[in-house]
Amino acid sequence: MADRDLSIGQVAQRTGLSVHTLRLYERRGLLASDVRRDASGRRVYSAWDVEWLANCVRFRASGMPLTTIGRLAQLVREGDGNEVERLQLLREHRHRVTEQLAQLRDCLDLIDTKVTSYERHLAAGATGDPWQQQPPSTPDEHTHQVA
Image 1 (cartoon, rainbow, N blue to C red):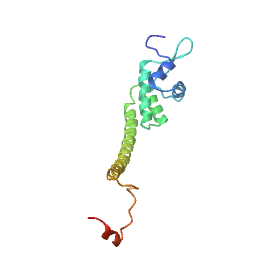
Image 2 (cartoon, one colour):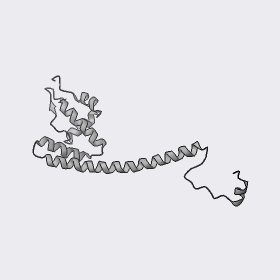
Image 3 (tube, helix red, strand yellow):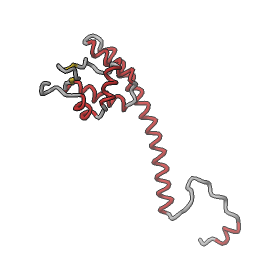
Image 4 (cartoon, one colour):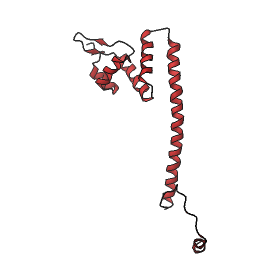
């Protein structure tokens, strides 16, 4: 192996992917280049392969389906001339991620509202659920309350 060539174990360590996942990615056509083999038949990866796999990890973390990653990898393997299709795949995924971010922002806003309410509720020394309506007070309770 040349100094820049990496074993499957080294690639697993650098990408955080398991050896099993790397083999699966190869079988599913998710790599942008063919995996080379050394004289003993062991897989040999380049720095570019590691970079591509790091992108795949981020694509997956963003929810990109393996089929879409595979199509993108296929287009890269095919070479120049299909950049418009690559761009379209990425734009479509970007749109989905943008929608997910908007939904997550809405969820975070709700959580922040709840956290703030509980913090205020507890800081005031109150007990119970701040989100449950308190029963209306009776007229007798009003006369016994201290102003």
